[in-house]
Image 1 (cartoon, rainbow, N blue to C red):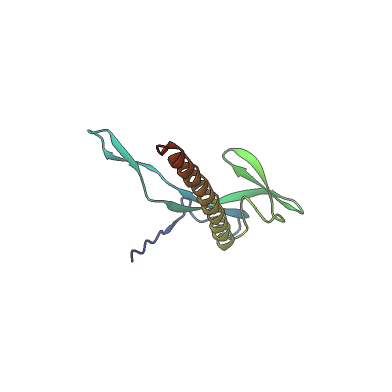
Image 2 (image 1 turned 90 degrees about the horizontal axis):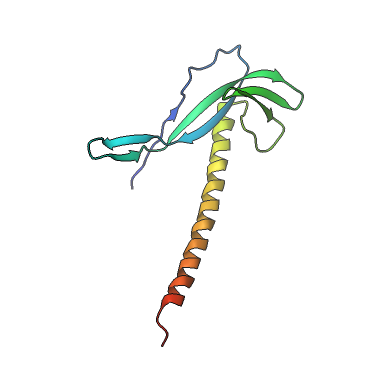
Length: 127
């Protein structure tokens, strides 16, 4: 049995304890060069990135953060949140998002396989 461990990568230095931050975990896959002379490229293994965003303003229901140069409101009372108060919650949120993504892709695969099966039956020569 192959066991693949994916360490969690934190692209930014840890924030100072005095800084108010929210956390988000994302999976990134990067383009890599396999052989530049043969013009062959591929992708890296998935990597879990754990990022933090500085809170610029708190409200009774959430917080404002700077995300990609724009201000973004995070509703901290919502079940699904863009960012969370702790690293553990961010990783749990990512796990839920990935589970949902897997369910959606499995459903799409089942539909495509059913459609292909119908197409293969139709294309068979009639007796």
